[in-house]
Length: 331
Image (tube, rainbow, N blue to C red):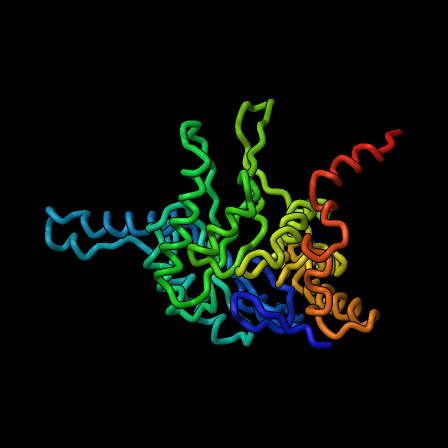
């Protein structure tokens, strides 16, 4: 079975990608993911705030004691006092890129168009095959308009894409008034791929302690409906590669995303639940599904059920919403 797939102009041995997670901090896990059939791996995100904070601390250390005795100028605290060790992360990028035969994609998480440019270039120099921009911005200022928010996303993509030679993908959330139009703007700004969708952090409130509590739930299969919708709508309508993420638990979920038109399917939660070896289950399950139907590759099903290819495109639109409500029978 030939599972090879094209994503961001890169050739992958399978369409199943291990997206950014704590598992991917360790080279031995990355090697196991490759052995289990992963087409590519995405390294854990580096946050713009971490890069900026490290620089602030370094500047403070250099300035500290500059008007004191000479012997004080040679004092620097241990590396553990830094907010983030960028050198260690770049070392992971370099080691992984050398050790793996599959593409190693670095992830950057930020909200401005300038806070990480030097680091993006460093990642490229370390050997990353591509960069995934994970843009997470909560527009908590009620005076900020929708177009202003969209412009921030576009500026980030345009700036980073112009600064590096490797392909840039952008991971976004679904909260735009017109996700399809936004996808077009991002592609025009230089994005070679769109990762749909980012599961944004959503805080909870503890009524006992009256505190806002952080929390992150692993995704489950029912959450794939929204990205499935937009993958299906965008397939064949954007020049950017489409990566589906969220809710991938089984080979059947991968098949659904491919049918909708995804170029690759990414998973994190399933690997965190079941371990790195679950990648083999997903890849083998996809191959078995295709073989059982006499299909030679994922290309034989990719986009077959997209908005542009189904007999009833209304299934993706308002008409289906009305039908679902009218046909529903409660208890």
